[in-house]
Length: 413
Image (tube, rainbow, N blue to C red):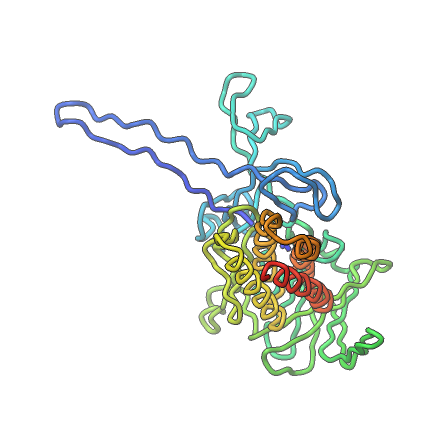
């Protein structure tokens, strides 16, 4: 989803301007302006990926949304105390910082029970202290240059890499993108499938070539030696996180061999690493400063929130453009990028809802349920894109595309 995190603006700070008086007068500075706070957003207590800019209910579980102040920061994969406002290197270990979403609240020194959404004063009169807390699914960045997905259990996360020909590697994480301990890795049973046959009539899949994934001695990941494949290479990991648990499917498409950004400098010098950009955070008004890079679809990197055109034909045209972008992303296996045009399509649908009264009654009768389906399936595309199951994504897209067609027909007459 995170999807995946999940969507949020990098905060701009206002700095105080300093002025100088005459040479004879002492120098004085104007007081610094108060830093601008991130806007309040509304999120679901059970589904943190659901983020809206106004009160309402969760489209997934119908719980009332609650206020949260979300901030997009850059932090170290190892040293979580590092909080920066832009990309760079960790001052402790020199690793590249990654973008993640945190909840911004305020607390008081020696009073951890105080956790409020607005800054203010502590009981002793001192100023409250900003506190940044990583949210579940607030970090969906691949940590080893691969493709990152969330398991349908919404707790486990996985990253698949293709570091060299004939080798597939699977890294395992919890819901905060922390690597699973070795004892939990040993509970996982998994295999990677490189060839299979899907029967559309029975909707059953027959595996033609599969390889067991196992943890190398002392390693906290799973690995398999597979058959050679031409690039782009497609393969599927089928994973059971516990012996009696459900098996989940994750579909990967590797346009090229993956390169781990954490390799030591000597190794990097021999084989330059190509770092996969992290997935942008999710939320109202969020800049997609690190949105997944795609060749087929044009995703505006300046703003996840799409600018709503002034006329109905323009809105409908933009909606169909987003439909095409999603189709192209699915075709090339870039599932982690689907949420961007999907949520933009959702915003366009909401804009059209306000224009329903302008339609004739017969067109309104078809346009209104079409918009409802479009909004729900946009959220569904966001969710299944994080999970990485190609069939689920394709099924959700079919419903979404049909809803866009109904909406287009209603608003084009």
